[in-house]
Image (cartoon, rainbow, N blue to C red; front, top):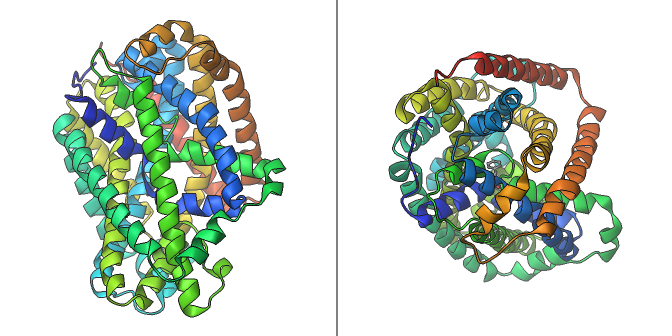
Amino acid sequence: MGDTSQWNSQLSFLFAMIGAAVGLGNIWRFSYVVYSNGGGTFFIPYLIAIAILGIPFLILEYGIGYSFKDSFSNVMKRINPKLEFVSWILLLFVFIVLIYYMVILSWDLTYLTSSVTFSWGSDVAAYFVQNVGGSSNLSNLGSLIIPTAIGALIIWVIVWFISHRDLNEGIGKISKILIPALFIIMIGIVIYALTLPGASIGIQTLLQPDWSKLTDINIWLAAFSQILFSLSMGQAIALTYASYLPEGSKINDNVLLVVFANSSFEVFTAFGIFSILGFMSFSTGTPMVQLVSEGTGLIFVVFPMIFNIMGIMGHILAPLLFLAILFAGITSAVAIFEPMVSSMEDKLNWSRKKTVTLLSIIGCAFSLLFTTGISSYLVGVVDGFVNEFGILFLIAIQCIIFAWIYNVDSLIPVINENSRFKVGSLWKAIIKYVLPCFLIAMWLIGVYYLFADVDSFEAIVYVIIMVLVLVFSGILTKINSNK
Ligand code: PHE
């Protein structure tokens, strides 16, 4: 390995892993997924998805990282030299996620600054279009949204600063500060939200069970996708972080802790989000259905509208919420960055500082493409393709590679050694048979929907991404790592 750094405490690793998992998805995605997939009923498929996908796959990822103690591209190369090409494809897809994830964080930064004076005004939707996310009008492609572009630069500098430092001084330290801070802020927001008038209307709407939905395949798919996304699975993140673990670490037990922290955080936050929506419904008489949304619509349009009518508490809650999103996002961003950093360090035989600096410059230049007048639209198009088509497929492939080409039997004693929670033949059966079938099926369904109504702009973007990813994977594979 080019870099021999190790976590100096189990706590640094644990907080870094929780930081990787807890991100925007836990805040702006989960509650909507619950609401639109059977309310309280959703928790059944959700728990099953944790049991058969989340925990088994993460144990596999941690286990491989921990036992190889090497970067993702080297791990794949050591399993079979022909697999190095595949590893770069995944790493590049994950790097693309980072490129637009930074832009979303830049939108959040704009809102954080606006929340001081509520400069978003009364027409928040218009504010979002003009100053932050732009529109889908392709003629705006030539112009930059200045606050978003400046924000992206600032976020890149922050991430560069954290990542270029030594592992424990950078990612380790920042996670140990930001994650507890995030949890404290969120607990404060949710407890206050629960006391708002109308909170119960919101929570009832969120949890209203619809048992008939249990037989609907879509809620099962939604649960499995939520777990994949929320736990940041299969993107070489857990593998890379676990490769920095010293001997004697607890693998399975750590996985359980991360999964527990991630799910508790999203369930708890969902109660807060829906209480605040309930308050809005109660105060203005707007039906809940008209308020409920997800993603940017929820956080950057509906929430500022609510803060506008909340009085003094709105002025306290608004900055806190945008700060929480920033903290959740930054710890995820450094995690998304790390697989590429560690693999490139090994490939080029460069120091962490030099590798991170080079990759930050390249990444930042690409992020600026996402700060043009079609910012939010382009993020949506690229996100759909990269996740549904690229990453999901590569997760399935990894599962097959680790379970079939690499012999998981030899992994079992290693991961069980220091953990109280032991895995055995059931885990192996899930990894070898259940997950590959399941993941491939999910991929096929996702790809069907993705391509069912693709327009020409989307098609061009998809082709550009595929060409770039394949060409660069080829080039990176060809470079000789002099080792
Ligand atoms: N899990 C993160 C979230 O919930 C998102 C993420 C996905 C981060 C994939 C890294 C990799 O927002």
